[in-house]
Length: 262
Image 1: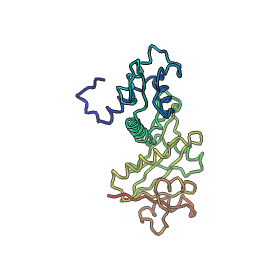
Image 2: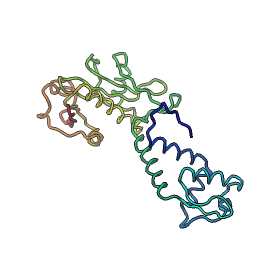
Image 3: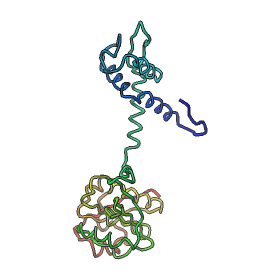
């Protein structure tokens, strides 16, 4: 396979691409599955075991052998071959690492033409009416205004309707996370986690010492995100003076925080 030498590909990327190319045919996947199920080498024509034309078997075997996925003799009359266990384990390692590495909440995004797609944007006061309607529908306190120092994000569906939101309000060296909400029809799709990650990234970039929040229902979710429950006495005075802390949220609300290394 030829590669553009002007691009600095990683060795693992080249190796993974070579393996993927070799496996890029259903007949070869079937051959590998069959060989992996055997306790010994395969002798004779594999076309007797699998629905593969005899005329193409040697080509498929050659591709797999060139990639190092199988070992043995694939040219008649003495034909015997099996899985190359060392390279098989290497392939398993590379593919597993690739999918684990890329399996995160950011894949809430799908094709921009899909009804499952979401677009995240920073919200302004023009979005307040729709944002507050979503908060009201979920029995959450509304937002009176978005100050220049506040950062709010909203997620829009393919109809450009706000289906999720989150805010970070500035109080001296701290941030107050508020108005995290996801429309009932769009829950369990990673939207909340994605929005929290965006807010945490902003807080880190702004050198915030910590993020605080008050919640009556989402404490388990935030515990999973490594937030800790704190007492009211441990909350900085700047946060205590906020309207959400002093007036809006009930006294029974759970207070949580997450600190950052500055």
